[in-house]
Image: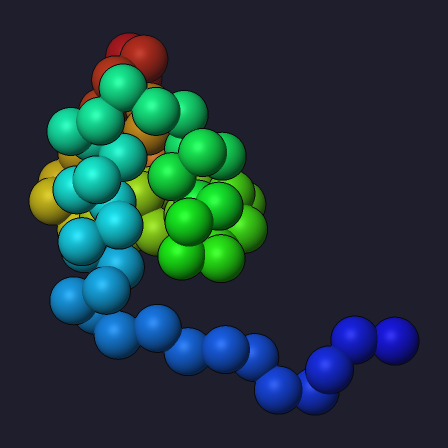
Length: 68
């Protein structure tokens, strides 16, 4: 059974790690390894950041791509 406590990261930390993923030639897994963040958490942060900027995935709420 896992811990009942989850680790919290600051918004600034999340943004810095996401920026590193975008600016580096490393994979998400390689970038996540250094600060000890799982790649799935890092992917979630990136997805949330894209949605917040208005660049959600096709089919996401508010996106008209593919609708007739």
